[in-house]
Amino acid sequence: MGTYDDDAFRTAYDKVMAKWPADREAVRVATPFGTAHVNACGPRDAPPLLLLPGGGGATSASWYAQAGELARIRRVYAVDLVGAAGRSEQGRPRSVAELGAWLDAVLAGLGVERADVGGHSYGAWIALHHAVRAPERVRRLFLLDPTQCFAGYRPSYLLRALPMLLRPTPRRVRAFLEWETGGADLDPDWLRLQEAAAGFPASRPVTGPRPAAAALRSLDLPVLLLVAANSRTCDIYAVRAEASKALGEAVETAVLPAVSHHGLPPAAPSDLGRRLTGFLRG
Image 1 (cartoon, rainbow, N blue to C red):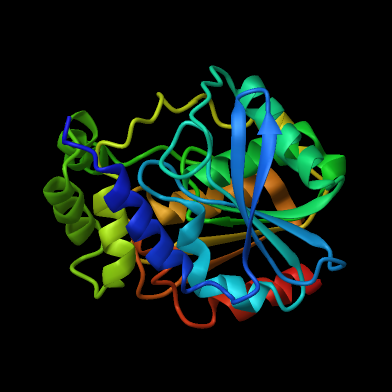
Image 2 (cartoon, rainbow, N blue to C red; image 1 turned 60 degrees about the vertical axis):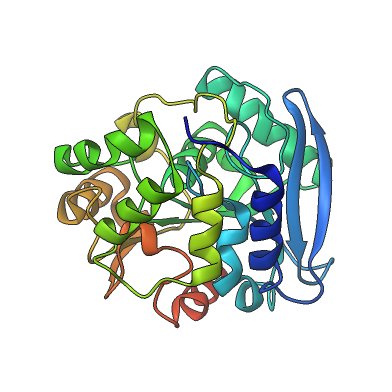
């Protein structure tokens, strides 16, 4: 494992959080798996929106490019995932059910009974499982380049990621992100945060099957699925086809141009925030 520097991580995290709206506040919520760290902004009386980041080195800070636009119409709650890089305490849920119990506790602590939910990558997998398990608690759901929801990983992606996963170092993180994003011009502060997360003392993430086909067919709420045109994680055409097959008319799918999986959400097209607010408004 690479040497992890907590001070460097916190400094990098705060630098990215400085890009959030000025009214942003940190909220701490007690759960059975430790205290969750939630970054909140937007009108307190607006409908709630829960945002879930991807796994690995991703954190709630990654939503900075869309937070301001979303906060115009929603009370935004972006949570650092349990057992992953961030400022949530490192509890150890060991199953999808326990991960769901953690998320239920976060929402209860925030006083949220029903919310719009959005997630990227692994966060989209969590969001979809939450919607299937408790559909009465989700108004609308958006998924950004989800993984393990409708199609599996490309073998080439897993092979390329393996050295970074087995022995994460800042150099390996940067090299992997440069490969997956095709050398895109990434925000240097956000990139520094990904590097600083290398070696973060995280627990093993909860993984599991895709949501059951029958459960997806019965899901009765609007879903927006946006895939990254340049994603190297999955076959985006298979993702869209399987999502449409599973969710039918409930899902709207589209391709985000000129961005890869790990370019989301910070390097997404500039109109992503507007697109998401349009969907949330219904």
